[in-house]
Length: 101
Image (cartoon, rainbow, N blue to C red):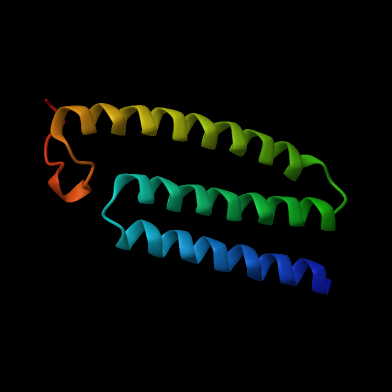
């Protein structure tokens, strides 16, 4: 393994760890969505690193699918949170105990 690959994988691990910590600690739903996006971007960095190291395009194609899913997740998640905020006045995940309005 080259130093390029090791550096990128360590960076990917650090970003993924920050995302996990943010997901577990934060109470705001928007911050939780951002933590999930961090984890997806860390996975993308690892995919691209492996694709570059092994001279394959498979990792790059997988990154495009992950970006598409992350975009859809963000759009649907934000739409749900806007609806919840309009009906309850908060998006604090501790106060969301039921899904009905």
